[in-house]
Image (cartoon, rainbow, N blue to C red):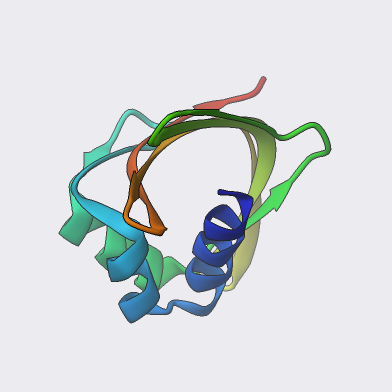
Length: 114
């Protein structure tokens, strides 16, 4: 499960659309800390264009319940826009489903940490 999470973060950093397409479930609900919610196509387009870098804090928790995994942790999103880098501290919750041997993210929600 953690390998899929790491592969997702690497694909986000590099803007790897093909890998994101494989890792994200067709029914994806991707909720940002600003309350914007995206479907799979919108999410991939946004991630490929911005290439954020999610730097995880220690203490990542992964719990697996059969074919479902819940991932929770703190991260800092580093996003460059218009020549400036912004750092956004986040509380992160992801839901992953196992399909065969593969894990696919079906939901993600973040909250800004004050």
